[in-house]
Every structure is written in structure tokens, then in C-alpha cells.
Image (tube, each protein chain N blue to C red):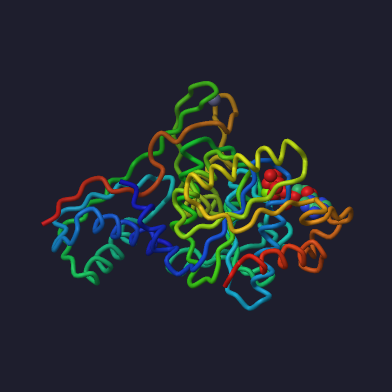
Length: 130
Length: 223
Ligand SMILES: Nc1ncnc2c1ncn2[C@@H]1O[C@H](COP(=O)(O)OP(=O)(O)OP(=O)(O)O)[C@@H](O)[C@H]1O
Ligand SMILES: [Mg+2]
Ligand SMILES: [Zn+2]
């Protein structure tokens, strides 16, 4: 599973940031919907990988972020729901969210030149160590 | 905090050497040099990877003979690269159905970070990285992210190309990046011009061009 790699990156980042924490009391992970990552998969690996490294894990909270795209040509803002995309396209964006630019255009002017303002992928929102 | 920067270190930790193929000018032969460098190492029995980091215009799959539409990526502690001509290969073309992928600034850094953070290369003697021309987002981001990197500079004998190559050499020196080789392509002083090369792209591994690239790399790799 490639969620293993995503979770491991979060674990490495947390531990690098905090030195040698004994416990992650609270962790908030933001999941941009463009990447269609299942929170249960990330949580499973986060708990397993942190415990393997001797770190206790308290509450893990996931916040799903809607996708917001803004056209650079005409300024139009819109959203898109990957669960309505063809399965192959959803899978490409699951691995590499930037692939969105190959498959979607601005609904107002037709341009591929737009910005992913929000909802791209996985990142750490908040963390409380002990 | 971008966790991918940490993930990348882990995913690259099994790689002994990383060779970034660069040139200030376009169309000088970086992609063919990258592919032939990788094929040459694989033939010597090395475990070698090739990353196409020309994210908006990937072409390394063509000389490697990989049809991007036929590729089904396998997931195992990340995404497993595809094997072609003895080389482990990863390219952004696997995620676009070979369509145009227009990206700017931060998105270019971001897609490179994602590819490096999810690709499971395993243990490699060497990772070869093909880049787009110039000293802009892709190249700077790669030089920032890649550990243990050495540069292979490709140029041609024109006065413009050699001026740009000199600037690139100075830049690499200032950044502290070792120059493994400066290959002059389409030149009597380096790799000659082969008029029929384009007709042989599909079996590049059998060409005099490829043999010449491998020979140059073998003479400088000190390994
Ligand atoms: N030694 C050579 N003899 C003849 N043709 C060559 C030689 N080297 C490269 N070419 C031709 O030049 C063209 C460009 O090669 P290649 O795509 O490898 O360059 P590049 O530097 O990667 O280009 P870009 O900057 O667009 O990525 C190809 O069509 C190739 O066949
Ligand atoms: Mg190229
Ligand atoms: Zn628009």
C-alpha cells in the first residue's frame, strides 16, 4: 500500500520535529479530497509505525478538506469531487494529485491553467506531544 | 510542515549513488544519455533506477520502450517502479495517460516531492535522474531534495551551448555538487553525431550511441 509511505513520512516528520517524544497525545491530519486517501488506512499505519518506534498514540483526528480550484486565466473558483471521477483518473490523483491538471479544465473558460487552492493531499494539521 | 521531505529521505536511503543528468539547453541529448547510462549500468550487473523528472514533458519511456497505457503500478510500501530493459523506471507519464500536464512553480516542486516520497526503489547501486533543460523549478527542487548527488552535464559544441554549460559548471561548483562528467554530445570531442539515431530509438540499447555513453560513464564512475 502506498498509504504506508504517506504514514511513514508523517511519522518521520513528527519525530524529527519533536526529538524523542514518548507520546503523541493528539494528532490532527488534514486530508485533501483530491488524493482520496482513506482515513482508516492512514490511521492504521500511523498507530502501527509510531508504536513500533516506541511512541504511544492518543487521539488521531482527521479533517477532510474540500477541493477548491481557482482558474489563473479567468479567476473562476470551483470544486470537484474525485468520487465522481472515472476510476483510473481517481487512482492517478490518489498517487499524484497534480495529475488533476491533465484531466480537468476550468468549467468557465476551458483552461488547464488553474491553482489547487485547497484540498490537495495529506498534511499535519496539529500535534500535541508529551 | 511538509512530511514528504522526511519521507523522501527514507525512500532514498537504500540508494548508493544519485546521478542527475542536466543541461542548460534543450534538445542536447539528456534523455538519451540518461537512458543509456542506466542501461549500461544494468548490463554491468548493477541495480539501477531511472526517474524521469521532466515532469511536464516526460519522454524517457520512449527509448526505454515502455507504453504508459499498458502500465499497471504495483503498491508495496509505496509504489513499485516498472522494470524495462533491466532498469527500474518511474515516470509522471504513468499518471497522465500521456496527456499534457501544465504545471507552475510550486506544483512542479510538489509533484516531484510526491513522486520521490511514494516511489519504493528498494536498494539501488545508482539512481539516474533525467531533468528538463535549464536551471528552473524542477532542477532546483531536485538539487534541494536529493542526497549524495553527482551531476552529469550534457552540452553540444555550439558557442551558445558551451557558454551556458560553463555557467552551469560554475553554478554546480558554487552549490558544492560534484561534476561526475561533462559530456559533449553531437561532437567529435565527445559523442559523435549519428544521423540515423532517431530511427533506432526503439532499440537504443543496441546502438553505437549507447555503447559510447556507457564507455564514458564507465571511465568516470570510479566504483
Ligand atoms: N549523438 C546524437 N546523434 C544524433 N542524434 C542525436 C544525438 N544525441 C541526441 N540526438 C537526437 O536529439 C534529439 C533530442 O534528444 P533528447 O530528447 O535526448 O534531448 P534532451 O536534452 O533530453 O531534450 P529536452 O531538453 O527536450 O529534454 C533526439 O531526437 C535524438 O535522437
Ligand atoms: Mg529530455
Ligand atoms: Zn477559467
